[in-house]
Image (cartoon, rainbow, N blue to C red; front, side, top):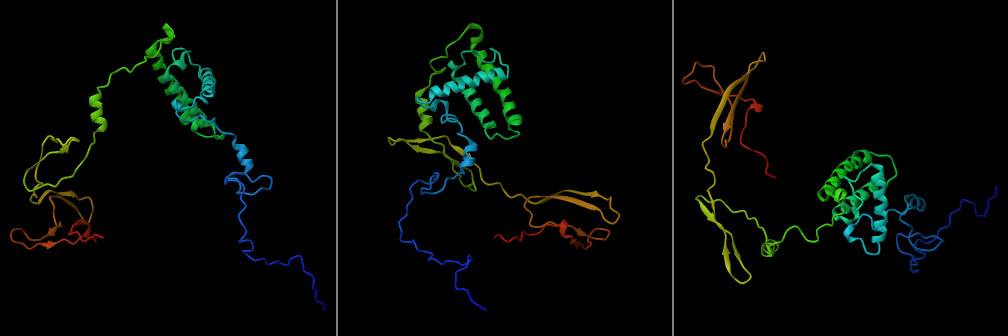
Length: 289
């Protein structure tokens, strides 16, 4: 029998585990970017095929507050909004009593429509069948149309022509009162009950050192422990063949509650404690731990 000395196709080559331990890292790209072209760096977070299926996503400005959209993105946002509103009006057959041609000149209507546009995008962005459109989007469409109609009605632009929104607030602040609320604070304190009535009042020291006291509050003593009473003693039910149900109510903090039995005619008869554990309450022996 001859023995071959040539390596077989199944032979393993052993290499040192830390053969390149002293070699410097050669990362050439940031984490989360594709390594493409055989370059170094960590692999992409998403498989390129999956990333392509997801698409580019919404515009950069969509989903942030309308008032916070940058001047750079505002023209694109207005254009997308106009296109969406035109679709919305046709899709849901709205009339000028529900939305007017000057909608873009009224901040409350713009806010409502922008919120609707973002919501409608969110409902369909996954591109798969679901309940969102039926249970969320369409019920809110009806509510949104009602709100839009109320905004139109208060201005009557559809009857009289465009009416500018007021430039100023509909009210004037009392700045002194506002400053007191803005700079104030609310504090809650838990105080003990004493054996007798006590009066409490809050005290604050102003920044200038002035001591100011508030309204006094009378705090009464803790409730007195009343004597334990037994009420409602009754034969509850005699429906069973071999037993009856008795009931009583204990008022007050009782240490123990149970029933006694005697078969004597009354008077000085001796009583035997009933030992049914389900019908008794005794001292609390629960481990406080």
